[in-house]
Image (tube, helix red, strand yellow):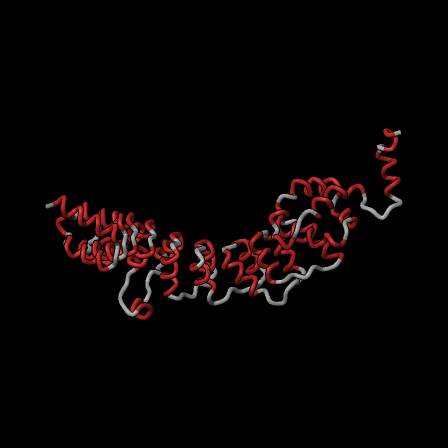
Length: 329
């Protein structure tokens, strides 16, 4: 009897008279119901191994069997995996409404075919915000798709791409003629450590800014990179403009405690070792103090440095300087 009841034909016959799930969708529906959308979309990423084989076997037409309560789950799954067939099905049933976070997900997932689907069906009247989001995210495929459909980047697009570290996007916008330039952009790229962007800007002549207007005093790109601790950018700028680099970068690196940059610039540019050591002591950067004292003992005034360490209450630095003076005496 047990054997008879377990046969697929009998099982299908029984459930056909009940208000339950069609047997063909039991597995994917259970998987979808375990996903809590309010917790994010990471769980949907793992459903591909379940849903993709099911879709290949049954086709999109069988999605009509899914409960309506799971259509939103299917929608987000389609966005994440670039499945426009599911989107077309949902569009035919009841066009989904997208809010700003949904459009951010479209951009983040970066499936150009999905964006093309929405563009072709006029899901929005104003695509400018989507373009802005794509530029900030650095999604070149999305930007290209929007441009192909006549969406024009804003006048700040080039600067936005650079500030957010997207050199490829900046290059694309430049080639399309959307390269309106704000000189302060280089400063932001330096501060944030976007090496590819800095290299792009230097190579294409966008390497100047009015330091006096921005800071009220003269400062160079090398000074900013050294102060912010971006060694690779410091090395790049020095290779490009080594002969014209001021010694201020050496002092800024010591002041901010960036030992690797201090070591790189030491001997490559003319910076005051005494001032660099004083700044390192004042800010309690022990490793920088040790390096400068050990490599430039002839240029160091230990009494001055001890006074600075004492005034700033850096006891560990003061103890080191006192011991060093004892050893040298």
